[in-house]
Structure formats: C-alpha cells, structure tokens
Image (cartoon, rainbow, N blue to C red; front, side, top):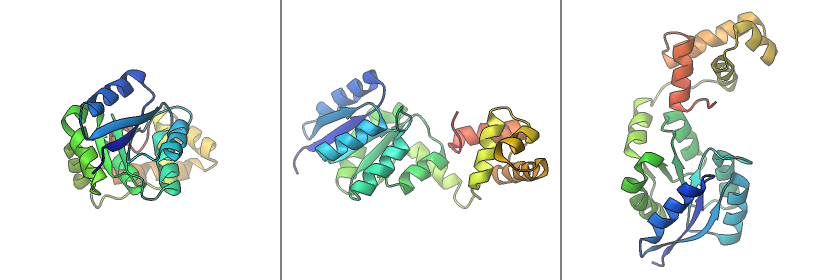
Length: 206
C-alpha cells in the first residue's frame, strides 16, 4: 500500500504543526495539505482527495460537523477521523452517524492517532476507548428532541422559563413541560445539573 495521504484540519496552527510532525515521522504516512476552518477543509479535500482527513470539530467559518457532512456528501467513501477535546457520547454519535470513521480525543493523540489512521485507511472504524465506553453507557437512552435541545441551550444561557418561551414563541407552560422532560431524559437533579450533563455529553456547546 502506498503512503497514506493525509489532510490536517484545525484552526490552531501549533496543533496542526504537531499533527504534521507526528504523522510525517511515520514512513507510511504523508501530510499533503492543511486547512484552518471547515470551508477550507471542504475545498482542500476536493482539490487533494486525501486518503484520510484529520478534522477538528470546533472551528470558525464552518465548523467541523458541517464540513464532515459536506465532505461525505461529495465523496461518500471519504475517510475522516475527528480530533476533538469533546468526549461526550452525543457529539461522538452525531459525528459517527455523519460518516466519521474515527474519533480521537486530542489528549490521546500520541497514544491512539497513528493506529487509528492505519485502521481507518484499511476500512475499519476506530473510536477512542474513553469515548467508546461513554457511547456504550448511554445505549438505549431517550434522546432530546430538537426543541428540547433548544430549550436546554437557552437554559445554559441563564434564561428563565418565561424568557425561553418568548425566545421560542411558546407558552411558559409548554416551556416548563419541556424542562421537566429534559430533566427526566437526562436523569438530572435540577436545571443546573441538566446543563452540566448537556455540556459534558456534547448535547449543547457554548
């Protein structure tokens, strides 16, 4: 097999430099391009057709999730590994459902990235062990609806039920019903706990 051609996408130049140094130290890998946001990632992928793309999720202009969807829509066989600081099960599941074949936490890059690249290049799916455990622990959980996710995001911003209702054009009673459903589905003690769980699991981001 020829050397794996890799596109590195991250908005932090120092992190891209580190990824490039790590990858190019391997005789069976080479970095063929870099990008600093989602739009550049889509354009670079279209121009370079890399074997594997290393993709950060939180970036300006277009975030990594939207870039992942765009890349996979244009190239259904594209192999993408998400690199992120977010280990939440919901965010990981969304990325995998969108077509990512790998999911590596940035804190585990040196221990897991090279093996993940090789596995993905060979057609396998590989997820960081910590993330895999979190995914397994929430199998069968009820998911928040899109409206409940909106409510949770507004809760995280410190809004009252009345203000949430005004923002979403729903009644305060309906908002209260959504909040109770959120607490039940997340098995949260109160609003603050629900927000903390939402952030930890990757349901919402601030």
